[in-house]
Amino acid sequence: MIKKILQYVFLGLAVYAGIVMLVINFYKDDPSAMIWQDREAFNKRFIEKLSVDSDIVLDEVLETLGSPDLTYVKKSEDNVMQIVFYRTQLVKPDGITTQDECTGLLFENGKLTLWGPSAMIAYQKGFDH
Image 1 (cartoon, rainbow, N blue to C red):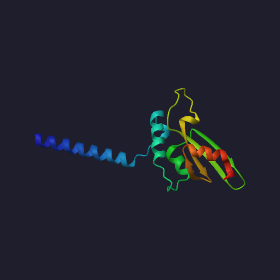
Image 2: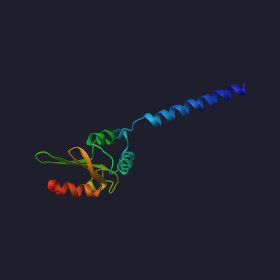
Image 3: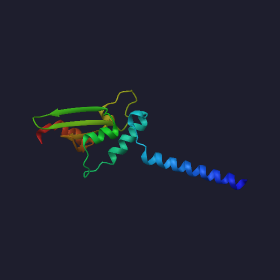
Image 4: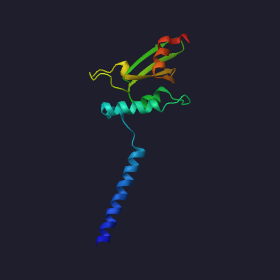
């Protein structure tokens, strides 16, 4: 009797562990469904993992992080420069997301070129470089 109960307990634990592993490996995070603290941490983790070697385009970032908190665009005849800001740190709990609470990601013609404080500096310089 006890042997049968233990078999069911171990079977239940195995099924539970299997479901947990499936969720961890295949469930895609949805930033729009997160509370603001989780979304902020999610954005920060994603941005910290970026590297110079990564070949990331705007659509990938939008798909992963969702809509940006702030965005600005400049166009010339054949170039588009866009900077998107995602909140990564709370400065003032006033319900308004400001640029100092965000990290900027600069895209030139849809391709990520810079992020962090240097992204805004390059965006402000525009197409002068």
